[in-house]
Length: 527
Image 1 (cartoon, rainbow, N blue to C red):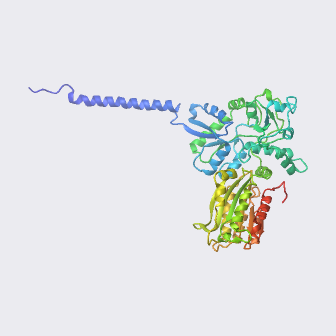
Image 2: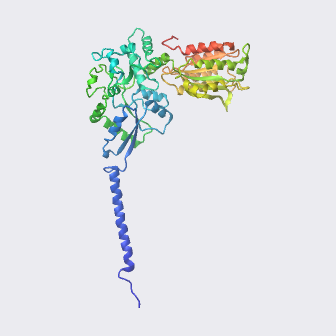
Image 3: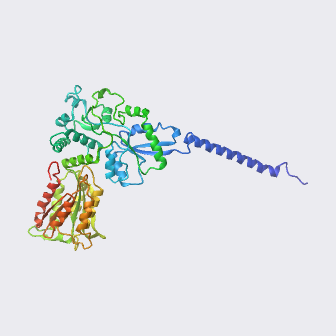
């Protein structure tokens, strides 16, 4: 018997399948749209991320405010706390990584970051908060100066108590304190000498706990200490909001909208609750312990670059902390025996150099290059010790590496190219708060036939001069083969000096004469 098809048999199944697929597709479309709306918030396709690196003291307030960004703004903010010196180093060594926005404590850090290599960093930013630089004291110390009946003055504190002091090359508190001291002494009969005298009081004796220390008003209030104000108008911490060049267009736009939120009066109340003043320097919330409010106005932004570098150089001269790039001659003539000593020129030079290390502070940075001819491929120089503090050089075996140096047999003196390379490197890595130097130790004159020549060297050195950032060459020449005029011209072109003797036995005398010049800086010693 023939059986016919069931009602709708062969044709019913595809219709049902297609209907189910249509329902699933519609549901999926609706679900994705619903989830997108839920995730992005109010129609945002995606949230634009804004990465902010901020000084540790202000980062918690920024994190709190980042949580208040309305969903309809379509961006999110992530705040990372980082020491400003470390951020400046990062920005100076990378062009792609890093945050979209940087908020250091002070605009002075922008100048120092540019010196560290972040050449495209904006010179200024919008201040989002303010906090004067003060000296912080515990109650018992402040009472010795008449508190709470009267506020202690900076001069009283410096004369009567050990004051701790951070490195101004790394800590903006150090810079702020130096600027205040410069302002305090500018009307003295001899301002430079007065500044030097007061800076010498900043470092407590080893093992002696400081009774006072530089701080911000905000940190002093947070720790329930007493704040002593300088009493003169000095730039405090202005917390500049700087959008960095690497930020994308979307992140830049979002960062600008977040800045508007930070400048809103509601955000100002949150800053005030944390102890910060408004960007204008006004303190919105009265504090019981701050009834002796600072009467002096606070200029906004960073001081002129000339003022900043001048005060850092004054500190470097007083503190005798240096950054020294050394060029050591290892040409074949350095192996020559020195009559009556049983030693070679190299032996005596290394002996004097090793002893000289002990005259610098452990925080002094030192790097050492060797030079001859064709010492590193086609280059006349090569790095022996990369730039580190003397303490780090000693702990990492640097002294042993120095003492193991031997002359290059048959090597000539590739002086000019090596000096220019070392000077260019030192200029690029010039550091504020240090006596920046290039020291050349040689026993001969230039013997490189492929050199740039002395006239070209002097011309190039002239182009690299910056009165705000002194970088002298100190020439030290020993032996009968030296060209004293050659070294003198190079040193003079950079504001430096040269010290020579035809007798290698007097290397120690010449070396210490040069070090006394290096370590006696104006205004302590006059040029």
